[in-house]
Amino acid sequence: MKKTYFIFLYLFLATFAKAQTNYCGTSEIDSTLFVQMPYYGNNAYLYTLIDSLEQNRGGGKYRTRKS
Image (cartoon, rainbow, N blue to C red; front, side, top):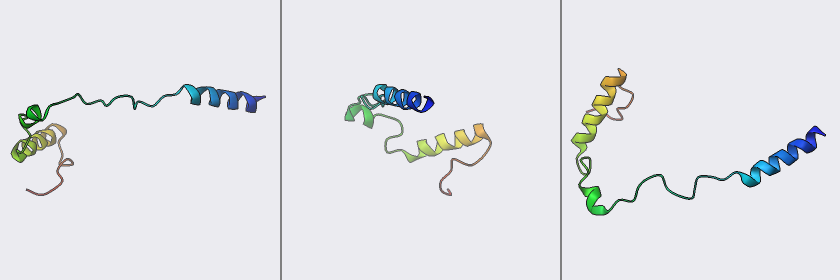
């Protein structure tokens, strides 16, 4: 009886479970807006961001290369 119950439960949940693939979580952005972002083509901004994360967390685990 338990086996039948679990099979029914599995089939019920499997048919009603939906993946979150209907939409992308990122917003639509135009290429002109993307170019205006502060990190576009500016690695110094990204390194500053990484350094600020390291200071807040107290370690260097975000650094991927020596600078």
